[in-house]
Amino acid sequence: MPDWIHRLVAPSAIVITVGAVPCYAATYLTVEQAQKLCFPQATGFVNADVKLTPEQVKAIEKDSGTRVRLPTQKIWRANAGDKFLGWLIEDEVLGKHEFISWVLALNADGSIKQIEILDYRETYGYEIRNEKWRDQFHGKRHGAKLKLDDDIKNISGATLSCRHITDGVKRLLSLHALALK
Amino acid sequence: MPSRSNSEIRRCRPLLGTFVEITASGLDDAALHRAVNAAFAALERIQNLMSVHDPASELSLVNREAADRPVTVSRETFAVLLHADTLASESGGAFDYTIAPTLARWGLLPKELERKAPGSWRQVRLLSDDRVRFLRPLAVDLGGIAKGFAVDAAIEALRAQHVTAAVVNAGGDLRMVGSQPCTVHLRHPSKPQTFGQTLSLRESALATSSPCFSQRTWRGQKVSHLVNPTTSQAITGAVSVSVRAPECWLADALTKVVLNAPHVADRLLAKYDAEAFMLLV
Image (cartoon, rainbow over all chains, first blue to last red; front, side, top):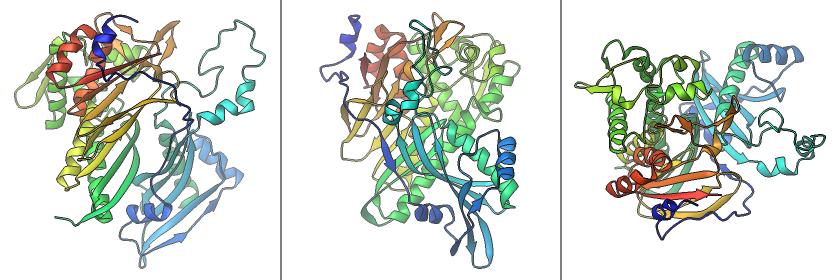
């Protein structure tokens, strides 16, 4: 350790001791709370769940360039009396290490109104225990160069990137265009 | 003045390329939600102005045109550029906001920035009336400071709505207000699923930089989003620097000074009433 580190780190120095905390999780909103936040003027939310046909799944995947993991989507129509205000779509995405449930609120014309995260969980532990993940290492020759991203799935990299939500938004906008209009 | 209450709300949105979490308390629920909405709006405004990934941002306009003519920018963008320029000068270039072409070459920033030559902060002129001029074609990237500035803007928005206790955390760059101390866990730089010891902070900001989270291989060479401006080499390895400072833009930017030039960092940390925590594995 170079000597300057000692100078920088005051007596209150923090030295990492690896704890056994396997993951981080936070719950922000229930769906009902998110409904009220996204459409404060709404007087009612009518269930409008969609079960996508295989053709619709294919079309959404082609249009958005993202994969549709679940064919059923929880959706509500927000109304103020007789007036249609917009859609609220509940979704979940799996990031590299995170599992996130979230909602996308769309205005009546299909433009984005709001995004709120409902629940965020990090899932490193799962991958470590997961046999499929461990199997990736089997058959690797000793000394074979393991390249991150190519050979090992989802263990390195920016743990806090929100790219998966961005992909989710693309997918739900396609869903709206192809299955909700 | 909205009525006082003991409730606390916690919300999260994808912004600034990460997840921004806001915790607020001290008012009734409806007033807290309104305040948090205003804070998210402030963050979104900074993102729209200063994202280097968004071709429609003000910063992208500056990068396209400031070498040809002075470009007038918003009060906020000019404030961040002034902060960046001051720290670049005071750190002798250890904090440099013109490393974008290098990062683009490594695939960490949009491809079109690669065409610019790696410049120097010395070739950026900040003129009267919030105008910016480059002395030669170069590209500015405020990634090392704007996230912290956005956190500060969100805190200002919460204060303007009379929130008395709050934490804004943008993917690890955070700031808190309130009389009670808050506990912050530091992520282990090479094993991000685990946390090290905790810090207890009050009325301050904390930012962490570590190459661990962005490290990758480019043409057989290890690269990250952290660049030493004097050598144009990436900072790599299992190291992580956290800086506590009064404001988040300062904490954010000072992490780079500590990583690049520890000999300069001592003086700057003292000047700005900041302290650094360096984690090695």
